[in-house]
Length: 322
Image (cartoon, rainbow, N blue to C red; front, top):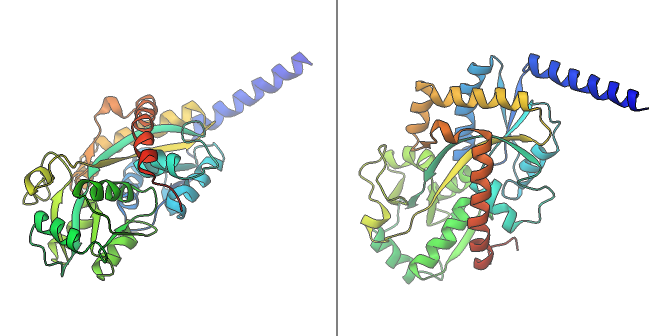
């Protein structure tokens, strides 16, 4: 019996090794747990193109939306661990959701990390017809109109939702929060003036800003960003210390062979080192993580640290699915 088990184990190991050596032999699916048009979707498509070149195989981007990204993350967790399903996630889907949603998967145990990509701040933006000329006037308007003001977000637990809650706390007032299925939808609502304000990423907002379709009041970072140097920081605009940024990374289902993870990580690193890919990300105000932070091990450590930092804050704030 022991001999039989040894033979089976050896055969399984040889088969796994053979698959890893020939990987990838067909297209790879990159699951985006949020809607089309948001920064997660945009970054996924940039990375898919860059990694496809490195791997020599097409990476197909598929959006699987719902419940703040938990539907898509569940799909990734349950996928066959063969390297042909990869997931892109971020601070909301892979940190905050664990403190907000009753998940049917474990954020740390059911995924194998591939690598960190980049981090980004928010813009504080408003509808085009907003009368406020600067951030101080916007805050005054929100306080005066708290009973009717609306702020959009990308869904319960999303970075824009949690940051929006912290924004309300920072300015000392509360107004209606309106959840959408992603940044693409909340941006469209802002453009249609169905909501008043939004915390949105430069990746999504810059085009609308340049077109004059929205008003941008500040960037939630300590320093101004290169693609919008005229936009003041929150410190400069009158809301000192209000900073918020969030990151993106790649994962695969637990049990994916280490050799395959290594190939995916090598492709991620190659894409992030490629000048064309870097320019696309930097042009969207992405701060690319340095090479030493692009490893699977670094992502695992970073994600756990983020969970340890943010879960108590989120739970204390009472942010949860209603």
